[in-house]
Structure formats: structure tokens, C-alpha cells
Length: 432
Image (spheres, one colour):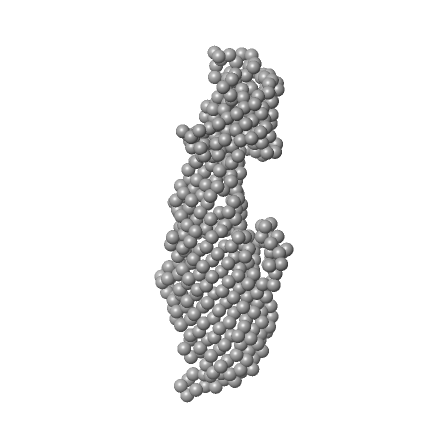
């Protein structure tokens, strides 16, 4: 849409071609692509005809911030930083009407090219478009001044597999027609220092450069994108992204992945590693230092090793099973409990090599297995402070425990109830 004013004189030549001279001016020009969040508004046009050439002196669109991104860091920078104001987009170039050839330049400065509630991109840079028709060449460099993508949008978009073809009554499947235009692309995109990805439990920055190329209709990507800090919610835990890289070596839809996420601040930092390609990823348990698979799972889910309380794998099965039955989050989390596990050993044990001062009556060395089992429910209150309750399955024994992590590997524990005491415990783990 918009308004145009023209004062043009056109003449036909004996060979059938036309020449023209005059000026074209435009105001309030707008170009909208609502589905993609693109809104070019309040444009100003200055152009003129010079015989068989159309010269675009200037098509100018000022930046209009119409949609505020939901991501708080992007929103804060876009709305309060002076550098994010007074952006623009300009186009200039010329077009030969006789030979159908031309070239143009597009310049972005702090321009919000994409404004949607689930994605946002403010960019700066230049793109050159060369058109020796029927060939079109697009080349340039762009930097993302501020950007954000919400991955949760992917779960709400219904799609069909690539091998599915929908035919309505009376339709016949026809081969895809070849485009009469040959397009080549060589575009480098730098994500800059303020690009974020959120959703599916992920919250991280993303940095790096990606070169997008199209040759003979084949779209390719070359470059490496890396995560910058952040964390991901998985298995009921908040895992810190230790490192993450997405390497493009050709196919844009199948980059190489190398991502590690760990539960940090523990004697054994356990987590998961995602390796391989996007189409065939492999997920492995990892830990620093390296321990057995059972211990990795225990440190990941419970924040301690299975040997700390003398128990077997029952507590792991309970935690993993409840996580699977409740779509990734254990059911007890809904009641404010951080851990609910079944353990075997002595009620009130600190997990040290020393026995507790007293034990529950009936739990002797010759007791049955059910008499040595108890349920533990715990709740973390602030950094390093945990409250827990231990209840014997076959007796009335109950122990309340308060523990505080003084430093890495050093914990103070206070027990009250059937077993009373104060313990100062130091643990150190070595790789196998």
C-alpha cells in the first residue's frame, strides 16, 4: 500500500521498445508479510526514468517497533538502549527495461526485520542483488543486533512428513515445475552478542557465524554456532550447559551436534551429552570425574551417589519410573518435594564409614531386607541447605535431617528423631 505521484513521458521506438523520462515519488509505502512478522511501514520513494533505465535513488523505511519481544533480555535492550533506536532500511539501484538487467543494494541499520511474539530479529548490514536475468545473485553480510527464538513454537505447528502428498478429488499429482529464475546466494549471518534461544526447557545465548549458500537450487550452510552460558531443564533437574556447538558442513537441516549439560556444584558433576547429527543424535550419560553408569544416573537424578546411603538401584528405578510416568517431571515435584526415594541400610546413617550412634530397634545385622528399607523425602531450601525425612517401612522409626554444604565435598548434617547426632562429613571422588 501507499501513495505514488509520477510525472513521466514515455515514447515507443520503431523497434517496439519504449523510452521514458520523468520522476516517481512515493509516501506512506507499506509492505506486510504478517505470517513472517515482517512489516515495512511509512516508506518514502524517490525514483526516476532515464530513457530505458529505471533508477531507484532511495526507498527508505524507518524502524517501527510494533511488537515487544517476550524474552526479557531482548525486550530490555530493544526498548531502553539508545543504540536500538532510529534504525532504518534503505534500497537503491537501477533496472534496464530493455535488457531486463539491473542491480540493487539493501542496507539495514538496527532494523527490526522480524517482529513476532515467538521470534524477533533486529539486524544491521548490507546485501547486494545482481540481476543479469534470468540469473539472480544475492550476496552480503548481516549482523543480528538483538534476536530471540522461542523453540516452543515448534510444538504448536502441525506438519506433514516430506513424503506425504495431499490430493483433493479431481487433482492429479504433477511433477514440480522448474523455476525460470536461477538464484544463487552467498549470505553470511553473524548472530552477534545478543541472540537467545528459549523453550523446551532451554535458555541460552547463541553466538557464531553461518554462511548460507545456494548453488543450482541446493541450499547449504557453513559455519559453527556455539551456546553462551545458559541451562536446560531435563530429567527434573536444571542442567548447566558446559559446552554446545552446532556445526554446519553442508545440509542446513542436518548439522553436527556436540552439546554437554551437567548438574554442577556436586562432588561428581553428571549430565548428558548429545552427539552426532540432527537427524541421528546420540545421547550419552557423562560425568566429571568419570564414574559408573549407575553412579552417573544417581548423581544426575538425586545429586548423590547410590553408595552414600548403602542402598541399591531401587531408588534410581523409583525416580526414573516416576519421571517417565509424569512426562519428564516426577509426580512428587508437584507437592514441593525435590526427591522421593527408597533406600536400603541403617536409618539415620550419614553415609560415612562410621556407624550411627544408635539404630532403630529391630534393625540388627540379621534383619530381613524389608526391615532395612526406608523412604526418604527431601526438599532443598536455598543454596546448599536441604531438609529431609526418613521413615522406616517396617517400624515406627523416623529421622529428620538438616544438611548444609559448607564447601565442595564438605557437608554438615544434623539428625533428630529415632537417631540424634551432628556429623561433619567430607567426601572425595576419584575417576575409575
